Image 1 (tube, rainbow, N blue to C red):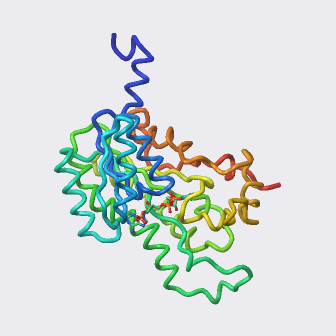
Image 2 (cartoon, rainbow, N blue to C red):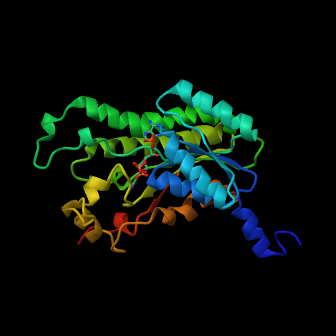
Image 3 (spheres, rainbow, N blue to C red):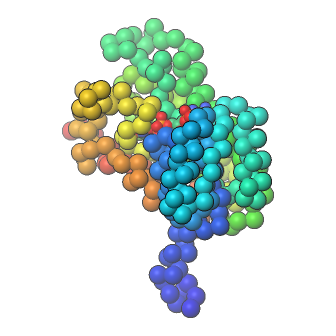
Length: 282
Ligand SMILES: NC(=O)c1ccc[n+]([C@@H]2O[C@H](COP(=O)([O-])OP(=O)(O)OC[C@H]3O[C@@H](n4cnc5c(N)ncnc54)[C@H](OP(=O)(O)O)[C@@H]3O)[C@@H](O)[C@H]2O)c1
């Protein structure tokens, strides 16, 4: 029975990543870890990338225990030589690379405007760091892993970037982060166009998560005792579903953006935000 005769088998195939190799940059973070487990559970082999080796090892062990083929590849995405070494090691292990998930980034504390401070007092260097972490880092990963995606024989090659609610609406005090994410969304669209028109078949999309507690934003959202900060409370009030997200709630979207079910989707930014971007707050 083929896909047309058996819609369930067809659907399974459409959403399968069996035989694909995924590189997840930022795999030890709240969101990267969820991405790694999502694409792994859909059948992909997963290369876990981040600077610190120990958390990557622990996540690899957890994934392997659930039957996912995963391994740690420590490296700094801002260091091209380190990324090239990771690319060679991943290719040597699995033979090809089909998917790149750019899940490293976040707010840079030094670029956060103090409560009540004037934006005219901002230092420029922390702003540069926010751009470096959220725009140049993902671009560096695309520059290094992209050529491997381009030569893969898989029919599905995809890049997924991670934007933020801060890209389209001003979030107070984190303007540098928002500017970097807005640029990343623009880059997502322009690379989608260039890579499609260039005939590579590589699709480029982004997810814009609402609010999920990660290391880079924990102190903005939660007090040391786990209660909400005032900012955390305001965010929940503007999220119609009334809570922070669970990173695993990004799983279905990341799988969809990587698998054959989205093969005509490129250059989009998908919000997964509990309704935050739809709601004016009134
Ligand atoms: N959490 C949210 O609510 C939220 C919402 C919207 C968007 N996002 C975006 O989602 C992404 C992940 O956020 P998160 O909350 O999961 O952050 P997180 O928990 O702080 O994790 C960040 C991850 O990135 C890695 N990383 C940082 N700098 C790196 C570098 N130079 N090279 C390689 N890896 C690096 C970190 O590992 P090492 O430190 O070991 O390198 C860690 O694995 C970010 O782009 C963030 O802006 C998050």
